[in-house]
Length: 199
Image 1: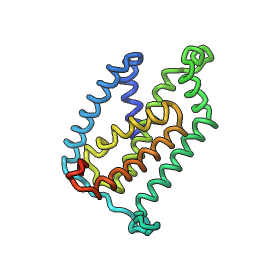
Image 2 (image 1 turned 30 degrees about the horizontal axis):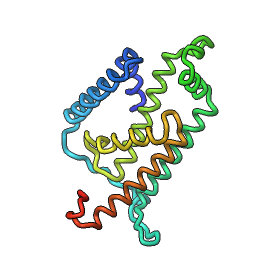
Image 3 (image 1 turned 90 degrees about the vertical axis):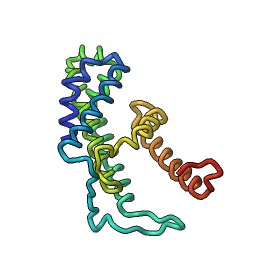
């Protein structure tokens, strides 16, 4: 469903803004506000609790670290999505056409690839993956219209750190940033407020 909505957004708004990154950024940000308000209107502003299945509940000790099963399964789920995306890009016609359009749009169009169709499907694919990320987040946080806002800055940092269009770099960047965040959060929480760490 998220992928289908992404295709509609690309066809209705984004395709008119290609080549204008600032306007695209402003349009998508404004659209996110509209979608958030639409969710508030349809479902209410209160948080919705999503219960974990029994096999995702509980935790286990790993040395001096307590790891919850739901977070472990989210990592497994993420790696499966990553492997599926790699296979899609490498072994399917759609993946080949997407890489061709990304690398050289004019040449891809001259070879008969419908670039506008690939643009829409690629945006839909990204939106679908974002929807799957929302499903994963629902297992560790309450569902609300603002669920993903706390992750926007981290997402941009992962893309910049890993390199645009580089899936392996994105994976390494995400793991590095996540581990760094956890270590910094634990070190800040162990120090006093006088040391300058905010909770």
